[in-house]
Image 1 (cartoon, rainbow, N blue to C red):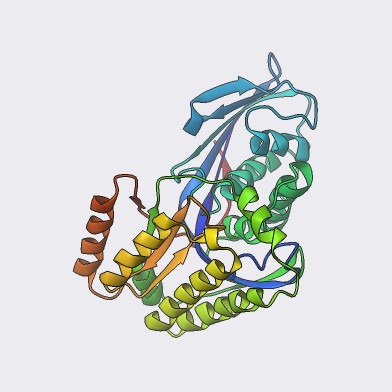
Image 2: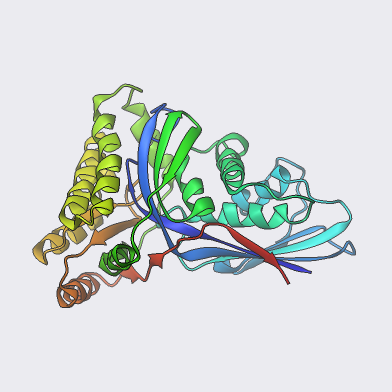
Length: 335
């Protein structure tokens, strides 16, 4: 038997940083997009290693033989097996792959974790709701692995779509889907670009720097919360200039948290986008030395293509990653 699962990544996380334990409460807007994380779990009777992990992006295949709670090569993947109740009489090989680069600041690790947990959940009777899968994935990163992360990435991957998230008290949140007319959604998809700067980063390390300079009621968090509602309202009204303003305001508020959150590569992409008439830009995720930028283009598709060519010519490491809206979050099925 084979179990398959997929979960999308996310972009344009306006209000990010307010979905964390140190912010305590927050408002976040994000957009789930493809490419997605893909997991295939092959299940057979136990006749050798109980758990085998095939991390395709890294070209690694190995058996998991460390004691519970001790992780070796890929802790996020290995911890998922500790978190889920895997039957003792089965041998499992899990193959994991994602087209989005690791460290792209688009919730790639959350998408991988959600897809893997969703697949492993199929090994036992019943099915966890998508939001419960998101919570388990977030708890693996924070409780089992001791890493810093918010709640929005896992929710975006598990639920898909465009979401406005209200976190009243960490980690509890209410998710409000932002439903757009088809033509508005198509136009949004056409106007968005994702630019990877060519360098990954450690989001936990970036979080630690920001946490050291913040208090829960720090006034610098308020503008971030405001951009989430502004993003929702602009998209519902198909106000592209307003949506672009919210993206830019969020990036500047992010820069205000710590100087390193908008790095030199991000800034250069922003400058080129501004010169070519882009309406908005958002440094994704935690920012820092690597990651990516989401761009919102104007109505002129030729100008959009000209900008993307200019970015590619500027630096061979800059990479445009094709994206499309992911109306569906976690998907899982058997074959």
